[in-house]
Amino acid sequence: MLRPTSTTERRFRGKILGVGTTSGVRIVVGMWERSPFGPFTDVFLEQPDGTSVLLAPDELVAAYVSGTYRFDSVAVVDVHARRTARGLELDAGPLRASIAVGDISPLGRILRIVPKPIARDPRWLAAIDPVARILAPGSGTAGSAGNGRREYYGVTGAHDVTGVSGTWAGESLGSIAPLDPPVAFGFASMPRIPQVVDVETTIREPA
Image 1 (spheres, rainbow, N blue to C red):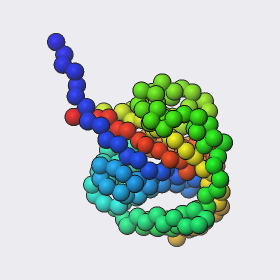
Image 2: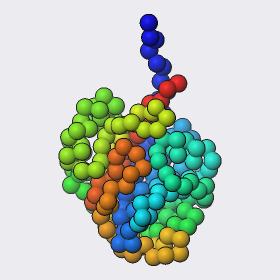
Image 3: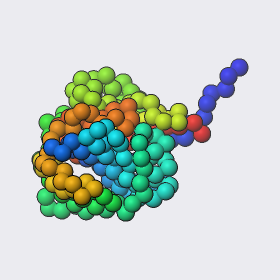
Image 4: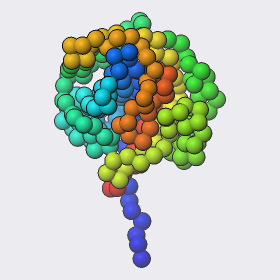
């Protein structure tokens, strides 16, 4: 008789910001206030040719995140995200960006309908995944991750990203653009319209 496989559950609570640029560079920033590794910020970046890069603040975060998502290269650099009156100042190795954040988005208004404890529950997230992919094409709330892991995105709020400027590897990012084509680090992308979302990510993995 097969015995049930035991699992370990890890939870990350914070914000994820996704934005495209006219240079073709697409950026996803995770700003984690609570996690198994303590507070940290990391950056997923996809270049115009589709090459993906993880910018992580230390080796432990780099190992775990690159074991969950797919990247062509990984760099451990100082990653700093400073909130400002307009939005966010990001400094991460070869990436420098000023990102403006606006009002609650149409997606954010929809999310307000669902009580937060339900919105973060993996059972709910697995059930609504097909609907989420219709409402926000390219995104999803449940799916398979690397190394036998299962991941759930519990999004409870969303604001529009209204502007971006800065440089990647010394070259201008240009101005704000849709997150298109969708980034391909994991089972889902951020919405096409640049957003910053409040999220609790649950990752279940074999113990």
